Amino acid sequence: MNQYIPVLLMFAAGAGVAVAMLGLSELLGPKLRFREKMEPFECGENQVVSPKRRFSVRFYLIAMMFIIFDIEAVFLFPWAVVFQSLGLFGFVEMMIFILVLAVGLVYVWKKGALEWE
Amino acid sequence: MDSIVSLITQPLVLELLITLVKIGFILGLTIGFFAPMLAWVERKQSAIMQDRVGANRAGVFGITVIGLLHSLADAIKLIFKEDFIPRGAERGLHTLAPVIAIIPSLVVFAVIPFGGQYTLWGHEVNLVIADLDVGLLYVFAIGSLATYGVVIAGWSSNNNWSLLGGLRASAQMFSYEVTMGLTVIGLVMFYQSLSLVDIVAKQENFWHWGIIWHFPAFVLFLGCAVAENKRVPFDAPEAEAELVAGYFTEYSGMKFVMFWTAEFLEMVSISGMCVALFLGGHHIPFVTQKFLLTAFGDLLGQDIGAVVVMLIGVGVFITKLVILLVLQMTIRWTMPRFRYDQIMKLGWKMILPLSLCWIFLVGVGILTGVMPRP
Image (tube, rainbow over all chains, first blue to last red; front, side, top):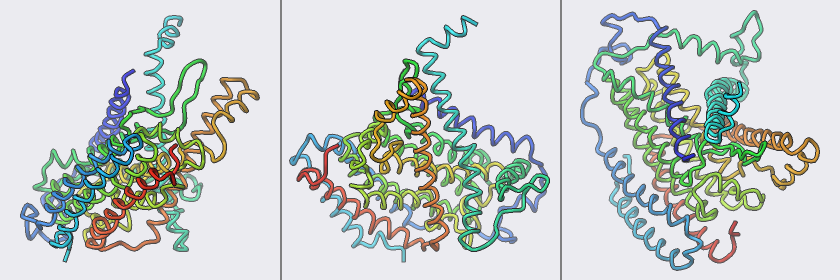
């Protein structure tokens, strides 16, 4: 049997659990709606500022760095699987690749992109 | 009757049935057993560590079973709670977020082996739902999907606390996902495989266990995994003292339960990963599976013996799992919460360079012959 069919079955089981949980709440929970209750929670006050506004640029920076270094990890996985048959040559080559990225990390570090005040 | 028997004995149908039984077992073990038990352990262990009496009130006719019924009482209570969606929230996404959170935390278990391979009545049984040859990548791929659930929950709630929690969670989970991936590279170099079944099979010899040759990677991996799961001391995204409840402030009833179950299930899957990668899976130190199979085979006959060995394997796996869960719970009740800048500093400035160094050291170790080649 194809190895991915059990994974699909597992997905179906997970989705079933999730839908069952949502359904239980929907069926058995009370529904009592009035204006004051539907306000988003802000410690009892009315909402002063809407959350739909701009937020700190650092989160974008982290997301960009995530992409760079996660792709590095993606390149490392297949290399690691065949590492022992590649021998010294493969090792040195990958260390150069990691070194290049490490220089990138040092640059980002020195530029202060990793500082949170 | 005959037709049913002949249908069941068809290889494809039999395989499907076995898969369904395994999925049922995993669902029962995780959602049915570990999630409520961990909720109880979290309260009871904190009570013991802080010298309190702790959860001991819920009971049926005065029988309280050291507080075990609290999980049941909580579940019943939460089913009958209102499913609340605040004004101005994105209704569709608000409902979708807990679904996205809980499905990955369950689906990850598909590749974690909870036992070995056994031959029962002439049929191969492999105690893993899907033996994927990219198992480890699959875990990281599915695990990163959980980020979406958290971020969407924070963004769709129309609540400032939720948004801040979601933002913190996104940056934190991104950072630790990278480092988590890098910490296991050394292990892949060591075992030459991404399949968790292969990795466990290569740990039959105790001296090839991951934790013996990769102890630094084990510490880094466990730390990253706890951070990825946003548990104390890395729980800035849901810091109750600053952000009410972080990204799930506006969730109630079963949707709240789904986030909370996802968190506990992730604890279990982290432990399962650690057991498979570092602690030898279902293997007992210095006892090979062949030895157990012949010992019990002589005693009880080939097939019954194999069943007993299978049960022992699952028992050993669950024992190791429980030890790691207790370790995580102990960390949770020992450490104070880190500040957010400390969390990011730890991830990017310490664990990331350290894991790169570890890859280098493992490479040198294997090439010079200091490390074995299992």
